[in-house]
Length: 187
Image 1: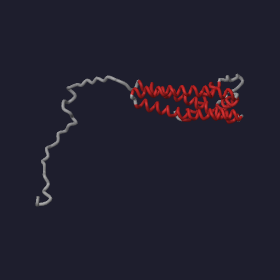
Image 2: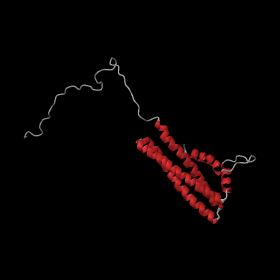
Image 3: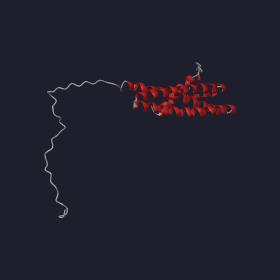
Image 4: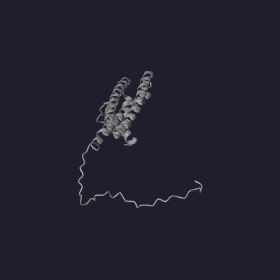
């Protein structure tokens, strides 16, 4: 999934996060209306939801860490690399979210509504991206589980068709050993 698709998906999934039902007369204004609704939230509710989102993101981080441990216990390099990639992204988004939370609280204390709305948007987007990354990390472990594993292979050889001697072993001709003349007549 490319970054543009992930961002659009994050915006689309962010709508239920604000929990305000859309009135029947209101058109589905898309992303812009979602941001307007977030900006219209009271500051106290932004801070409360921010704390909820951070708690959920930390829980997701723990879940993905468990998935990484399971992949390491299985000694499956493909799973470990896949989950580790998602984990790295989650950690980066967590850092951004924690900084946005602090900036949100600062903006609310100063009464800067535009800044608080911006920081809250960062949190919502990070929250949605982390949820997507969790799903992708779960797919890393589950999707590859059926493709890789212990399998029993039985080979039946038809002795009439397969030659007894190894066809890759070609006998080399005997070559005579020729010593070069001495470099000096005085040995």
